[in-house]
Image (cartoon, rainbow, N blue to C red):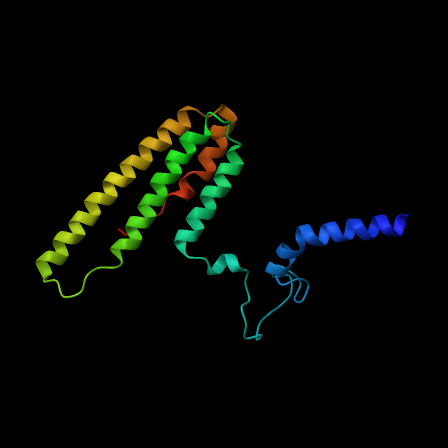
Length: 157
């Protein structure tokens, strides 16, 4: 009876944690950087370090949502905040796709328009953050003080 129970338990653990185990390379080199990988010629860090800045912000948004342990009433406020942050990320991504062949004045005007749009988006993010923050408990505010700033992308200076 015990060997069967141990087998089922092991199978359940493998099913639950197998993908995470594989993501960090298993025990091949000590898991998450526990062993030396110098000279291996391959990727020496987890997939997190290869994420784009956009993906990191999205992951931080997800982490913040879980860390805050939002109530059903707070979820729409967080969603509004998240939607505005993702809107800014999308706008920044579109700005990188500038049309070629514009003269200097059109390029400068386009950059001024982009800066104006980003400022408006940052103000919308700030407003959404204020509405969310006002609805948080004191304990949640302590967590928000730590996690929310990392969910807003840094814009070029």
